[in-house]
Every structure is written in C-alpha cells, then in structure tokens.
Length: 153
Image (tube, rainbow, N blue to C red; front, side, top):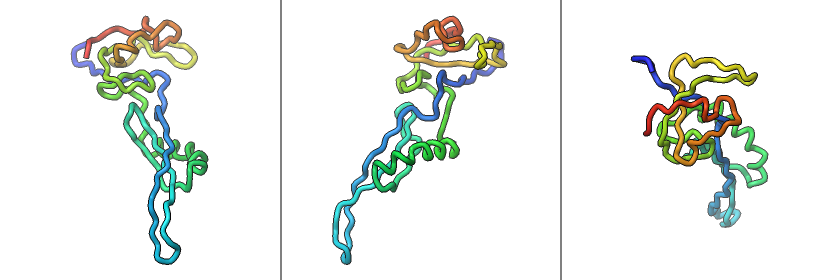
C-alpha cells in the first residue's frame, strides 16, 4: 500500500440492488356513517438490503396486485437511488449476509466479464465475516487467490 492511497469498497460479488423482497398485508379499520364500518386490507412491497428496509411501496389493493408491481417497484427503488452495489461500512460483502465484517481484503486484480484481469487503480477492498471469509477457487475475481488480507476489523 502506497502512502496516501485511499481504500474504496469494490462492487460486491454478484451484487444486486436488494437482497430481500417482502409483500405484506396491512389491515386497517374503515369507519363510515354512510357505507358502514369494516376491516379492509392493502398490500405493501418492502425491499431490504443487509436486513435494512431501504425502499417500500404501499397502498396496493391486495397481494395479487402487489405481485404484479414488484418489478416496477424494483426499478423505481433503483431509479430513486435506494440500490447500492458496493461495500457497506462494517457489513459482510457476501450477498444476503448482514453480519459484521471481521476481515478486510484487498483485491489483487479486477476482472471483466470476458475474464481479462487488470490491476486496480487504487486499493479496491471487500470485507467478510468469519463464516464467509473462505471464497473458494471457482471464480476469477472472488477467489481466495485474488485477495490479500489487509487487516482484521
């Protein structure tokens, strides 16, 4: 590591905008002197990343209707800036894991989809928890041989 060189979180392996989507029914009690009182439901779509709700839409008629709107809400959440594909401070970079990261690694090379490797311009890092620190040897970029341990967190 060169003096003054900044570390930056590399794109997560297999990065997705969100790692969990839920459709939930929301009951509400409607009161009306004209049509009467009754329970009604609506559906909400909730988008999570690393265990945190980052986008939601509500007021849909029911679960069936919400199923039809999931992709549109996914696009809307991404367009509104709720998607994030790089490292999140202190959280494991394994897709779907929300545990605290314990190890910080430097990537030796970045690889394009064609398999060409290039040296990073700066220090590109990924962080993993104890369970996900072993990366395997199948991928090019996300392989044990492409990481250099910088420090424990």
